[in-house]
Image (cartoon, rainbow, N blue to C red):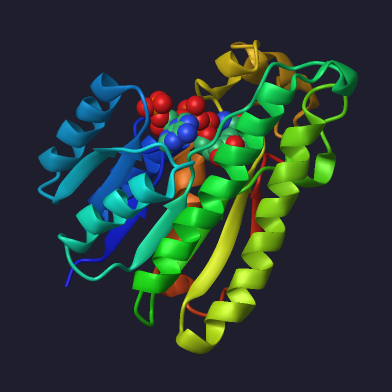
Length: 242
Ligand code: NAP
């Protein structure tokens, strides 16, 4: 039986790299995208080229009904074995006092409410042996002063969600972990108003460079797989030392 994994935000960046890697490892995949249908179609074609079964579903993860649609599409592929809670946004970089309440709500709604709603669906549907990986951020412990403290606070919430859910679902044989990336080369930095942020920050990253999405996908794949069978409630930092 092939594993069946749901990935939120699989059309670009870390989610797309994870979809590609999991497809190569034999997973059947249901991934969501929000706006970028063309990007989703490109990823879908790459997944199909590996011979795996995959579907792309347009979903705003802030909406519980749309999340239910994504999990229904996954159920058509077989028993759910994995969730990668990944769809996330930032907002313009700047001082805390200038934070726009609309941007604040968007970050909370997508990165926290959306994660909780997707984890709830997974917890309802997943049999023993399943695994959830939440994508957090090194920001949760760095705090991101002068940049986006609200985003860092929400990512700390992701870590708390991971720890609590790991304990609650352990008796059912479901593992829950998080990956906390550092600065990774994706389009998310355009949203923060600094598309070249990965290059700009390289000098303060101990390994001297930003990470690549596939380096995060590798950690996610390990946490979903049998080699991580005794790992739950862990926040795995993949940040080049940041
Ligand atoms: P990205 O390249 O901007 O991709 C974001 C993905 O999320 C896209 O597939 C996007 O779909 C989807 N998405 C956004 N809002 C959504 C919504 N409301 N409903 C459903 N899907 C939505 O981002 P990324 O850099 O890969 O980030 C992935 C995760 O890693 C996020 O949780 C982020 O906070 C975290 N992270 C990233 C970094 C980094 O440096 N890149 C560092 C630490 C943590 P559409 O394009 O179709 O809208």
